[in-house]
Image (cartoon, rainbow, N blue to C red; front, side, top):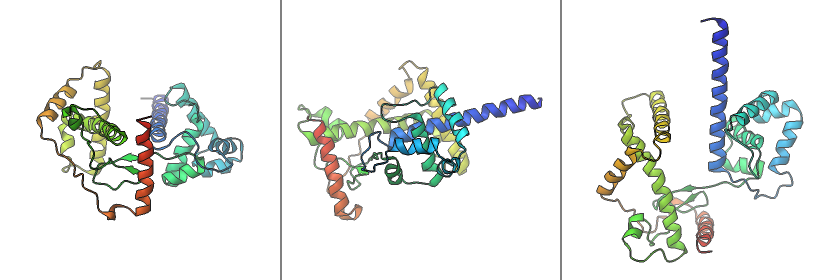
Length: 270
């Protein structure tokens, strides 16, 4: 293989790596950050990003750990491949800079929110966790599992039941995908005999193969039907709906989390 061929392959690999960065950045923004400002700084995220894009090169390098011309080329590649795009509230450039700021400074979500004036999202957790603004648990003492709603002759009645129904539906969809992938590739059920690096690679490869297979199945991927039949035949483990211990979180955090959960629940009843 000639040097030109080797260099060409290296350039292609670099481009692939850049596309991977774009994909991860898009996932991070969509999963953990809202697009609407919620803090009261006079310098919005867009204004801050604009300062970086037209300001001193050294400042950009300190924030993004990347030279600005290289960053602009990354944006061009990502935009040309349609991997990320501007949204109504945030540009592609801002999305990438937020991601680079996070990984380049090991910034926690709250720091990113404050710097870019964006609100954080939250995780859905089961009833074993205390309810806080970052970890939203279902209402206790209220119907929760999808099977409970399916067996009942009366549908969900109030905001709490509707919240629990949606909470359960979202968790069920996520857990179903994990279960399907493990059924398709049973090696994921027991990886203790492999090294950490090997396990990481195996997980990525399995998820990539699963997505590829599913994308070409035209909605008729047999593994989902097989998993659903298996799941229906299993006994359902019901979560403990008793009040959690106060050790899970402070009273202040609990109250703040409860207010957030109530605000979400009210949205379901108009």
